[in-house]
Length: 114
Image (cartoon, rainbow, N blue to C red; front, side, top):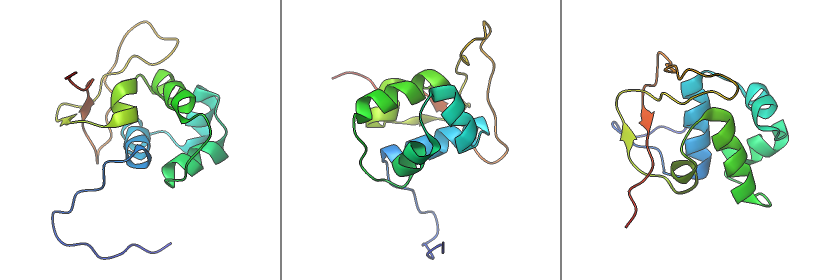
């Protein structure tokens, strides 16, 4: 895989693929761990992150949102990112703890309804 040269200050496209990748990187988990948490296969997660269409995408988005604590609406449709870092409540735990990654820090909030 090669990385194309980008102009300075480029911004990645706002897609489901990008959002799932950002969530995984922010939480510091690999595809295998997200697979175990969400009940989705690693192949399905790779397809999503590669930008390929998948059957019943809405169900898969819901599974990823539940597994990571991120807003389902943001994951499905995108929206602004916060600068403070996400604080989702991981499944099976009673106390919300911040997730931090040394390279990415953001907070994912539900998109405002029109």
